[in-house]
Image 1 (cartoon, rainbow, N blue to C red):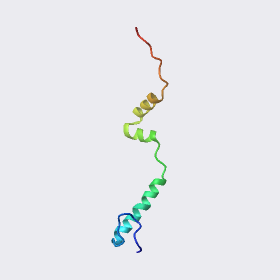
Image 2: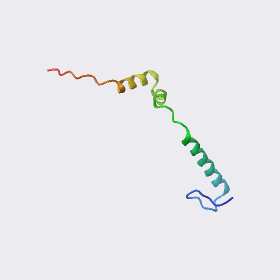
Image 3: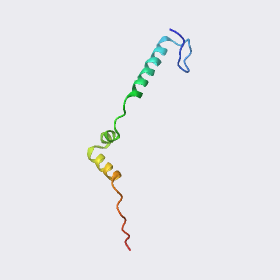
Image 4: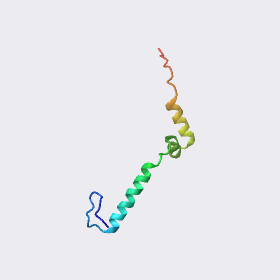
Length: 70
């Protein structure tokens, strides 16, 4: 194989090391091209559908008028 193009890997590194890094670089590029899962889906996955709905409703609701109690 030719010289390594990976930072920190010497040209004399074993072929397995260079191959592994090449495969990881390809995987990283593929993952970077994927569209991220919508935030609402991630929230539902972590806290459940009902709590996610309540949280989103609370965060997106119009602020209520404050009543001064005197």
